[in-house]
Length: 116
Image (cartoon, rainbow, N blue to C red; front, side, top):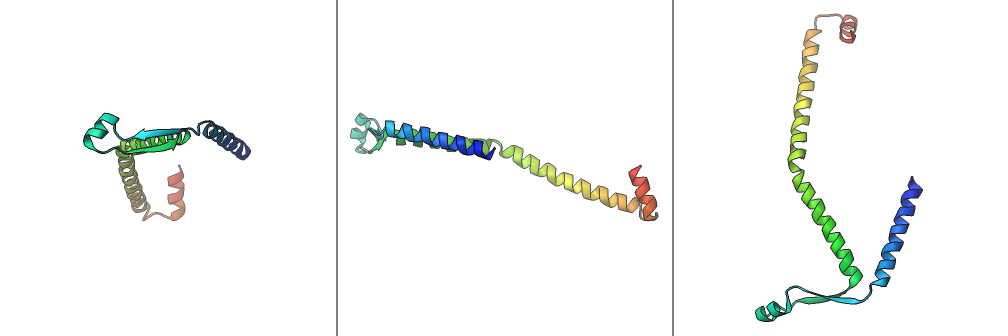
């Protein structure tokens, strides 16, 4: 399984390198459309290789997806934590009640009664 993972990662790296080499042409990214930028006076733009724009878009999308899902599952995580806390409390109470029940019995008899 370890070798399969390494083979997949090497193949992925080769594909990404091939895509990067094939898309070295520069692309200009502008913050605003040209007419609006001239009107406001903020003509912010940057020139990057196409492959970098592509890879940064993928990375940005993955990060937004992770954050979105983390925020969406917050309610489930908090409910699970509360349920775990209630379960531990119930287990402590059950253990305490069992100890009280078998307090006056012999240990061997208590174990036999508990198993059956």
